[in-house]
Image 1 (cartoon, rainbow, N blue to C red):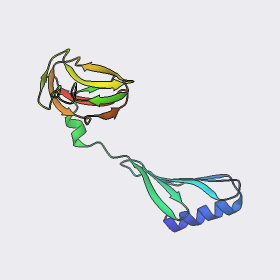
Image 2: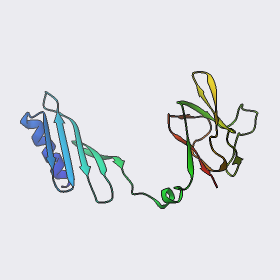
Image 3: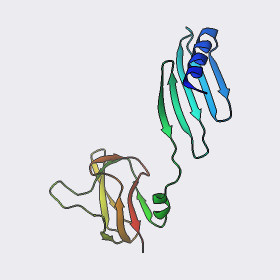
Image 4: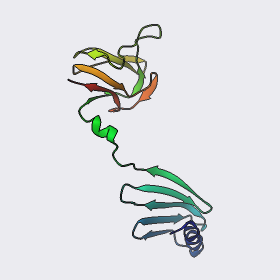
Length: 160
C-alpha cells in the first residue's frame, strides 16, 4: 500500500462518519480514528517485515516514522557473559562523590564486593551504590549527572 492509497483511505473514512476503521493486510496494519466532526484525529500504520516491526504515524498529508525494532546485534551477543549492574532507584547518577573528587570507578577498574561504584541522588539524598560482585568494569552505560530509572543498566562488569 503506498502513501496515495493511505491518504485516499483517510479522506474516505473522514467523510464517511465512521469513528474508527481497522484494516489488516499481509504486512500492513492500519487503524484510522476520526473525531465527531469527521476530521481525522489519529492514524497509525504498522509494517511488519520479517526482521522486526516498523511503526509509522500517518497524518493526512505526511508520514513520519515512530519506532524501528532492530534485530539483535553481535554486540549484544558478546556482552552476554558480562554482568549488568542496574540502578536500584530513580534519581540522578553521579560518578564521583563531589565535583572536586576523583571518579569512583573508570573503565578497566577492578572492583570488589562492597566497593562504591557511584552515587544516585533521590530527593536530595545521596545513595551510594555498592557492587554486589567482584570483577572488572568493562563499560559505563550512563553519563555523569544523568537521570536514571529504576532497573536501568549502569555498568557492565566482567566477573572473571
